[in-house]
Length: 149
Image (cartoon, rainbow, N blue to C red; front, side, top):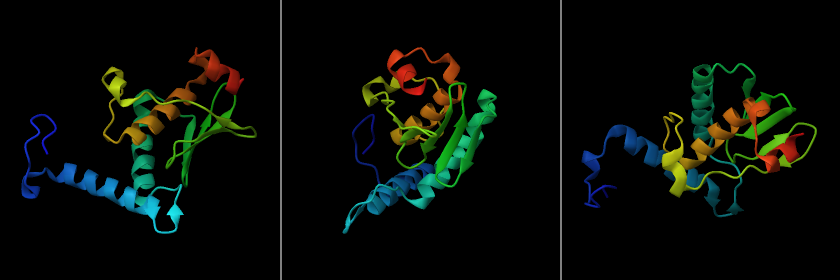
């Protein structure tokens, strides 16, 4: 369906990039919803894509304090070192506990001005968390500051 007109679209008329992204999302759904239960890990290709997007995004913000290792982005911040899982988006302070950072819900997405190359909300959430923590000295939210200080 066309998201603007709600008219059906033929598969042959779907742009290649859109089709590819939808198939990636299907891959994610299949990898998570296997017969043995819920798998907390996303597909390998999804994590690779997110890692590449992070690596290409960091220079745009002139950030040098983030590294990618396997399924995690490691961030050296002012208040500590953090790890963001590229599959789930879970954040941990290294040597500490999980940090609860709530994503902006979809009804507010129009207010986010970062140039995301991927429309997947989870990818946007993960990249936002990485950029946010890479500049943790600028965080003003008291609930987050309480967790990272």
